[in-house]
Amino acid sequence: MKFKAAAAVGCAILLLGSITACSQDQNAGAYQIGEDGMKTYIPDSTNVKRLGRTYELEDSLWLTFSGSGAEFTFNGKRATVTFAGDDNVATETAENQARVAIYLNGERVVDEMITQPEQTFEVFNSDAAEDCTVRIIKLSETAMSTVGITKISVDSDEGIKPTEAKDLAIEFVGDSITCGYGVDDEDKEHHFATSTEDVTKAYAYKTAEALDADYSMVSISGYGIISGYSDGKKKVSSQTIPQYYEKMGFCYGPYKEQRPNQVDWDFSQYTPDMVVINLGTNDDSYTLNDAEKQQEYCDEYVEFLKTVRKDNPDSIILCTLGIMGDRLFPTIEKAVAAYTEQTDDKNIYTMKFDPQDPNDGYAADWHPTQTTHEKASAKLVEKIKELIG
Image (cartoon, rainbow, N blue to C red; front, side, top):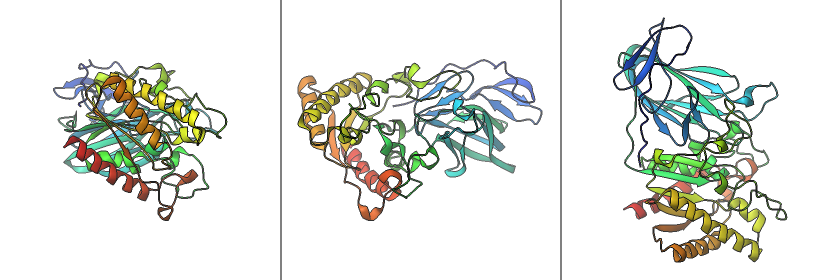
């Protein structure tokens, strides 16, 4: 349930602005010193705790899925963080770039869209040195855009170091609900935009926060087990989570000529105590009340559970559904029963969410509001407490 630290890197041979020296902290690895005295680090496992699925790519920490990021502490007077945009920032007509947030000691101090090839944000500036914890989070999802953290610079004698791993680790596998689709736009007639996605306001992130747990999100809007969002007639088989579950994700555009589906995820990097699966809302738009289609969903759900178990042999698996409709939940129960019968694996459970209440409103495209997410999180927290004792 911990992140696996990578080997310490040597001093990077890079021209990072006005760099004048290269050195190494005992705890934080290599850094370079600028003319202003700031220590500049390339983020990796020696100096930050990686949040979710991240990948060290060409002197940057690549963020793909919602909620991916990094966290570190330092004692000092100033800190900045530099991001590199993906190919989605290359043209003036580009849309749905990555949205990122930076927290300082639990308070959000940066909330920005990455619209340039390189953007630097000041996180902290003080005349006196203070103890600081910095959390960097990709608020938007993987499909439309990814982003890299290229530099972390601090005015600090001791430099930066990773925060400690939590005692509990959870992986959330889902769709737009898990991503926080439209949560910042409470107009049901509006449509998708990365600028209105915020994973921190969605049930999964809220659950991790409530349980003081580390987390990893594997979620893409519109995706399902056998079909993405459909008109009920044609199966959208290209939009399924199982094909990307063992990858860094999926994105229409590359970052440094790399796409997430070209990178295998190393499951030794993060071992969850529990895997929460919330998939079926988009499948339901295809299966509807068709018993044959529902059986196909059931069969493929069983196969997906076998993949999840292979990759997470000791994790509790919790299968959920219901926030935007619970019609397929009985089929999930049927799939879990079939999986248990085939494998004799009893470390797997189900839980039905309460469907969203119209009185709580709707976000973009009829998605859950933050109020609905809070209710869903409260129910999930109690179920996880029950299962983990």
